[in-house]
Amino acid sequence: MSDLRVAVIGCGAVAQLVHLPSLAAISGMRTTLLIDTDVPRAAGLARAFAVPATGTDYREAIGRVDAAIIAVPHHLHAHISTELLDGGVHVLVEKPMALHAGECDAMIAAAEAAGRVLAVGLLRRFHDSLRFAKSAIDTGLIGRLKKVEIREGAAYRWMLASDAMFKRPAGGVLADAGAHVLDLLVWWFGDCEILSYRDDAAGGVEADCEIRVGLPDGVGAVVALSRTRDLPGTALLEGHYGVLEVGTKTDSTVRLAVGDRRTVLAGKPIEPGGAPPASLVDLCTRQLEDFRDAIRDGRPPRVTGGEGRKSVALIETCYAMRQPIEYPWEAPLPVSAPVVTVEA
Image 1 (cartoon, one colour):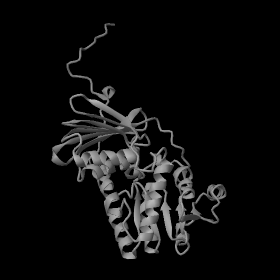
Image 2 (cartoon, helix red, strand yellow):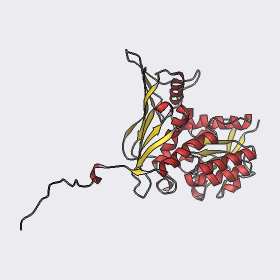
Image 3 (cartoon, rainbow, N blue to C red):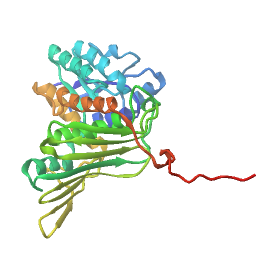
Image 4 (cartoon, rainbow, N blue to C red):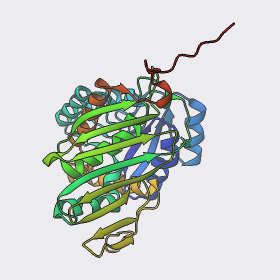
């Protein structure tokens, strides 16, 4: 069987550091075209990864490749994906799938009409520790849940090829990291409801946000995301039988305490014959293998457009009900504050 010809649309940091190395590591897919309006950057990556052709217009992919990876700024995902699907190209689009649920619906309809695969880059669903957490939830390992907390944050250090991540309408930390975290909640628990959302946007894009989410059975989840402060990068699930803590990014460690003796298991779950993912490239490789097999086998990918839409709808709801984070220094001076008089 011949290799699938793949175009990478957008030659930013995620293409350079994640998608192109992952494509080079798997069989059955071959990167044949890079598209970016930054001609020198596309040419440099083409040389580095031995890609034979470059272009500046995503439409150049139609008729020249079998599949495309969409790695452009968030607000461009929908119309580029839809046009490529209409042109007969299978699409894996980076998260968030789009900025609005209605755009997701158009993308899904285009994929169905063209008979093409639409996959969404929510690669944490390929993370062994997070899959273990889902199994623990589904089997009731720690009993009926009482509390869920997910906290992720650090000073922003991701390499960037442009400043799109810090401008509207691409969104801030919610649209970026929140796409992953809210997807975890809908994957683990099913339908979720946004109860409240606060951020520090103040007219720009948010660097810190806090979300309260209603889960099935009346359980509440608290999500904190930040690009400015260190947060543990874990999901903490407290049940009536015990507590489970898992890393939510590339940390594969699981901490499990069950029963009166509070025995703690710390380790990295692996599948038989496998190894725990150690990097984003490992996770992306798994995701691309699933995308490849979905195209070849005529089956849905692990993360379909319908699944990707769910986190987009939650993000859209958050922004619609945005309230400012309340900081102590912004509190008004109490009316009862003592009055200081100064005598001449």
